[in-house]
Image (tube, rainbow, N blue to C red; front, side, top):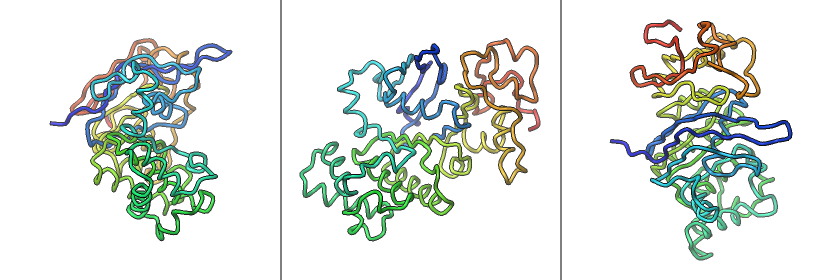
Length: 319
């Protein structure tokens, strides 16, 4: 039986600004089991990346999270900054979405890997150098001995992403949060990153939270899929259920908008401020909407192995 590694309950993150309080997402419940790959998918701006940063407690000063983030029986929101700093990297790793901005431009690739290894594994300089070279070789950098002394600007986008992947596991984390790891990459580089992430999870047995809007990448990597819309998880279930027989109209719309499915876009656009909406947040764009959907609180219901936040969702409804 799978053991839950991370359990999120009732998590809400808001940002305080001059215009007032802006909600990034609301009342999120999510579980990640040990060794599981969970894909968090949805349109740009729905709150996916903010959720990842909330788990790591890397929000800007005006960001506030409420609820529970239970990791290995400890609530991360209740830990001191010093304890949380020790958990980041060592136990929960981050693979950020912008490799060019995430790598230090004035340090060589090898120096950056050595720093991570010495910090998280507490090993001496020479051992760290050997371990850094091994990491580069294991994760697909050809001619890794030469790459060791190169700087980020000398690497391609795909190579930078591989270096970031190696950096993200220098502490041997139990959970890796990968935030849009294929964003901005061409098809070849994207396939290489997907293969790299698959290799990482298989070899290290760590859990992976994959934040992406790329449904093909999610289908290739994930065991479980959580669909986020306008700051809420609207569907959550096994990848074979959610991406093959989706129950929520929004998930159906995402799949219908893919080129291979005819490029049928979802009408209108996602609202920008989730806190201003009552009832179902997808109501204005939903083809199955009913009057009660606009004013009634929508709760998750379980249909077989999938949880869906929709009043009209049923096993027999045609997509």
